[in-house]
Length: 251
Ligand SMILES: [Zn+2]
Image (tube, rainbow, N blue to C red):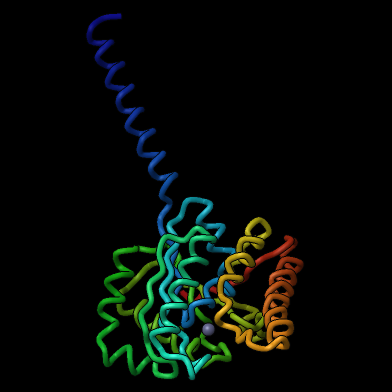
């Protein structure tokens, strides 16, 4: 081999090494996924299996929660509830493999008012731009809960104003898909391998259910789990998997 050929070979080897390094980096960091929801357990109920799946695949999964959900227990101080919610959400996030949970602290039933008045939109836009999510998941615009609907409106407005090009998907917390959305493009995520993780994460939210009476403990607690189980199972059956989470595409 001549000197010039050797040089060429070395050059090529170095180039290959560099490419491999870059490929590995890309494999380890596929980008980020962002979930924006109203209350601290909504992301797990609506997107939990999907979040765990994306985390496993190498995406950075981030969550932004707009309120502390203090109105569930009006007799307990807001600060105490907030502390509990943060702890629970972080524990759940660890289980599903998430990268961060951010609480915004809007008052329930006053989401849009607080959002504008306190100038939160600027900060939130900054956070989202920094994360550069490939996909954003949020509540559906016709959810039964007024704060879920407000969350949808806030996210859609920010999405348009920031001119994001992420895919924007909506999830339902309590309902199966209604007829109105039957023709909308959907994202079906096979969560058969992460359904158990989702349920485990959900168990960290004990403070959401008032467990002070035996009735509540037995009936409400199990009802929540049963509803989610049935929903994800039916979605699975519909799409020939064991369990599935289904989203409709907003943008
Ligand atoms: Zn909620």
